Image 1 (cartoon, rainbow, N blue to C red):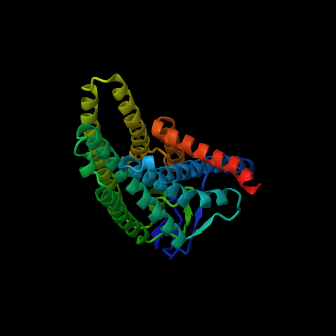
Image 2: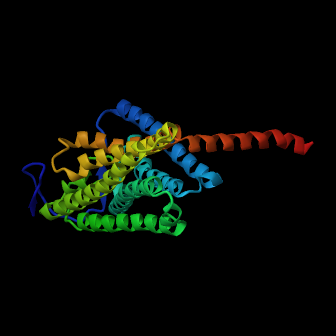
Length: 327
């Protein structure tokens, strides 16, 4: 028998088959408004990231290391938002907010894997810009397709390693008979609140790994952009400086948004005062950032805007030629 963390009730440790995702509070009207808001944001995120992936794939001028990494970033943003929000949207309009134990563990694994992989990928993208700007003559060799593929593979391996550790440590814990997860998806912090065991080791692993990953990748980003800034400031061409600052500024915006929210949520014990605040922070890095990234990279990137324009022109040309071909 174990004492419940939620009061003086005595709860037995039983193997749970299902969890209940409590999500956000409020009545049916509030739930409907949240459903409409989250659905709109999710659709924009899906369309934006799919568009980036399609444009980079179809336009030969974007077949370079930077856009190869950007396509993978769009895939990750699309992936971990899709792991969470279809289920979250279903719970808004359903009286049953159940998720199976296996479904919860699966959702947690893929969310953790893709989120960690994105942290590594953002560091790789900063290194790519460092080599391109500070060592342009060596860039074609240093960032050849095989090297780029190995770097991306390494990001996924690092993400898988962290996710396997986090998932195994979390879901091997004995959970109390209270199965209500105070969140809209299966995240580690609300899950640890349901266990009857001592979670000191789990928290040490979580904060230690997340802190190491975030601090390590942040150092790579800051070091890369430190050298990039010095190199750009030494350039004589004002137009060249503006173009490079614009390209690097997009990446720095994405990095700041992602690392800032993830650091607050996972690498600082006690930084989030309540689970309600934690839910808001979670919405930001699981939905708002995946929605903003395609806009950041397309609106501030001339190459992407030109590629979108070329694809639009090709489609318009085909539509005008089709009736003539039929006649």
